[in-house]
Length: 70
Image (cartoon, rainbow, N blue to C red; front, side):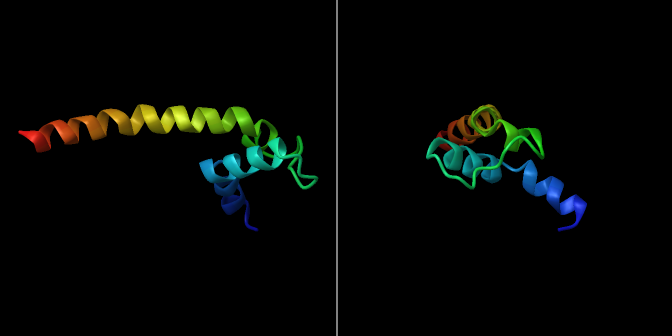
């Protein structure tokens, strides 16, 4: 895999969520400490991604809903 594509795959929210689920369910294939921070700490990365996405899209959706009701 090219380095630029590896960086994208290491830092996307789906990879962090899958790694967290593998780790929590006790999979022997769970990624270890090598690689990106998100794969070294997948549970925390998943929570941070969820908080970031909520902080970004919740105000946008509330504003859109409020403007549609007028």
